[in-house]
Image (tube, rainbow, N blue to C red; front, side):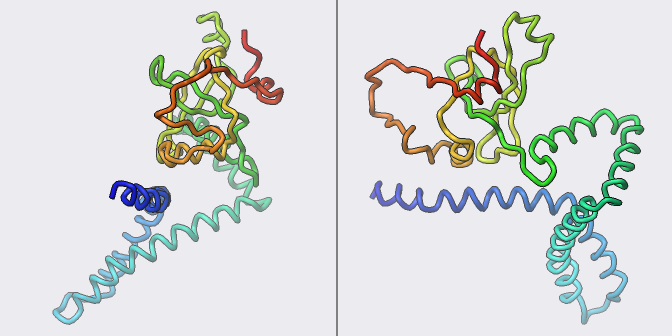
Length: 244
């Protein structure tokens, strides 16, 4: 009975996680773009339909069901059109003018540059920017390790204050790695994991259920040898810097 339940759970979990991630993306897009469009459609429906006893169902169907679908579709189309316009020469110039305008506004000029820097980290032109390494760091406390991705060198003042070489690591949250924590850890505490970024993402999205076969360890196995760190490949060593 337990084995059958475990097999059923293992079969359904990837589907549920996929639906959850897609729901998170779609709901975010709908709340940002589609919902305002739906409100406009509802306003138009109120203007078209006159209040009488023969039209309540069609008015409800149009204002609630149809407007939600149309709002989501219009939101996706609008995002696609904006991307198409920005990809053109005049679109880039217009976008640069819009950015200069935002940089002069009192409050927005403080937030917008950092939001743009964050998005540019993941998207650079037409190609998605990839992480260069997968690491494990002691987070949120000593003795507990979290999977993360090194993003940059540490801050100079932080290095001088701690007298250590620090590394900035992004620690994504499960099962939605779109959010996470930005932490600075000493270089000597960073453990390079011999797994790919794709394998690390599978671990994070599945909450640790899916792990690379060459790195899977049984909970019943007792360690028969001391834990050793894998040697750091040259490209990763250049990215993180040498250990002090």
